[in-house]
Amino acid sequence: MAKTILTQGDITTQRVDAIVNAANEGLLGGGGVDGAIHRSAGPSVMQECQAFDGCETGDAVATSAGDLFADHIFHAVGPVWLGGLEGEEAALVRCHTRAIDLALERGCRSIAFPAISCGVYGFPINRAAPLALSVARSAERSALDEIRFVLFSEPDYFAFARGLDSL
Ligand code: AR6
Image 1: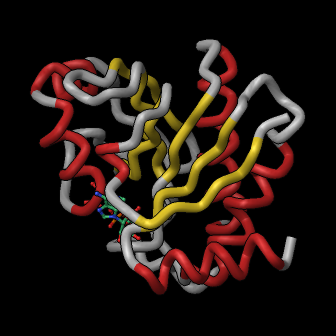
Image 2: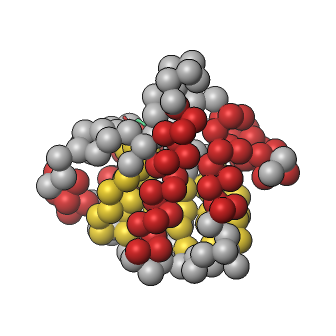
Image 3: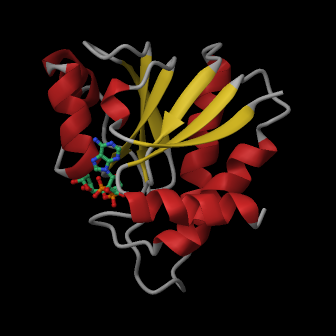
């Protein structure tokens, strides 16, 4: 049975089989966690990303993980927050579900997620956390051993901790 774990820190240093990136539809890098992951993983991952014709919001694609400890990076595209009436919640759930599916297809036992959409894309973290955690909860009976959420700041960590309590 998989455990859902919360930790505060930098996702690029996590020792897991798969790291999830908060990417954009172009898959060509950016700031935030996307920039950090590409800087740490090295240019081969960007080359793999360029071979895709982008990725739709709510979906995810897999590459190798370059210089990271992980074996895979799943580049998940979360929604831009537009006020909540444009299907943002469903898209956030879909991109998390897609990353879990990619992990299971590849035989991963552990996966680490950042707070997708909760930075530049403006998704309120108190609304995002229970959605992300509910996807993890539904995957707890899968072959995964650990689903880890890596929160960069202390307030983000506590938002996820409250979300976990309320599940
Ligand atoms: N480890 C873990 N979390 C991090 C790290 C890190 N090293 N760095 C930042 N975060 P964001 P989004 C947190 O903006 O909202 C990019 O330019 C950060 O504090 O990275 O999905 C892409 O290319 C926040 O809580 O992603 C897209 O264009 C969370 O990661 C766009 O931003 C997500 O913030 C995607 O926006």
